[in-house]
Image 1: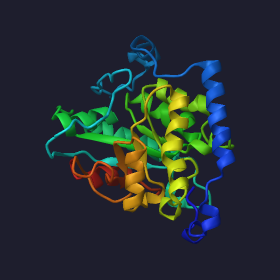
Image 2: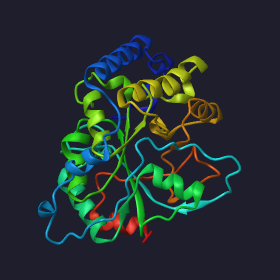
Image 3: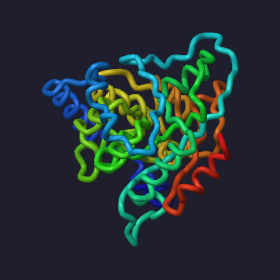
Image 4: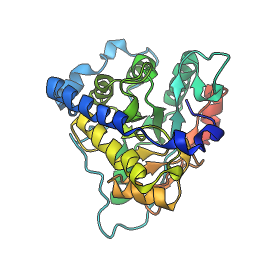
Length: 304
């Protein structure tokens, strides 16, 4: 959950704990050594998909593309300016809504399932980050009505609720995880993060400790960006190129640190449905909150 703005502006709370990051690095290394990492093979992907008989009766197959084992999302030199109309939806938690907390960051599981069904019925096709990247930098074609589903923060909802619903409709999503919380209750473990990756989902970085990056020293900023990326890459066993700013906040120094860390795609919380090569590190998204309805979500997309 997001902390209050007043809490975030206290400098002492914004400083990341170096021992926590070191522990995360050591944990990631141990898990990789013991369990192995990396994206699954094509044959494993095919075996893991739901069978045709498990599909809902009214469902038609949603075309999806098979990504390379480790797609390198590095902008080519001299790439022309190009933009594509691809809405990027943002979720945080899919869990029963309680009477406390930041309620608009939770979506009821039944409503989330109904929203995916509405997207499918409306002819929308979820795409991978590499597909969006190729459309932007290489002019590659996209399926009809392309959208990206993104999920922030890395709660266990991602594997318990969201992943099964995505697999039911043969959809993909990008999960932005907080690497410093892999050992905290309620958040994804390193093994669960790999589970998402091996299920064919995209996994991106959401910093080590989810703090307002504008408040940090250069050293702290490097820990939250480049340091967090190293931890996540150790868990997954392959490069990570996409990033989401905590709270959507950034400034010039933060964007420069994200670029220096090696990320080539980064998302804000600013609204919009057009992604562009002129601002690849400040991509807009559409927040999907508690009160959104399936029909309202389709209207929000405006036939994109």
